[in-house]
Image (cartoon, rainbow, N blue to C red; front, top):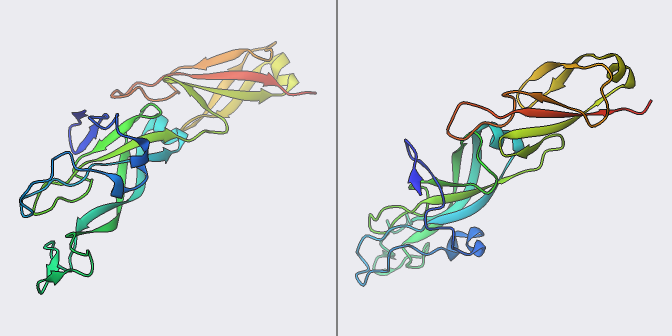
Length: 222
């Protein structure tokens, strides 16, 4: 996949064909580099891939989430050698690495699609013998919202209005994705009629523009 302007890269890279079972644990990952015959040669760390649930509004407009996961890091007990006093290290059992929980702030770009994959460079498992770290791949899973639904960059919602307002028309405050706006309900509005609010939907990826918010009216029973 391509890289962003900083350490945030985006796209699946070569990860798409990997089994979803590998999203469960760092133990099932394999390094892209073949294991060298020399155990002291630098070895690249594991690439990791997980799924992350992100709330609807953050996916639509962007934001930062906190994500915890496990990865292999250097064993500090043996300084990554696998041995202490010529015996196998008790902490890592000679593997030179141990599993440690990492806590990362993850930037969600505005307007990403559901199932989009973020590539976080160098946030995978640590390398061995000063080898480079692997990358972390996170597949964004959008959590359902009780009010909003999304289709591409447009967001849809239903608004209930009393019969009097539907008949005479008037102003109504509506809570949208990130603000409250006053809309005008036309007189003689019927159930199922829609109002389009420009530039109030989801962000358009890589840009500052936004899609529209489409309000579908439903008249309350009198």
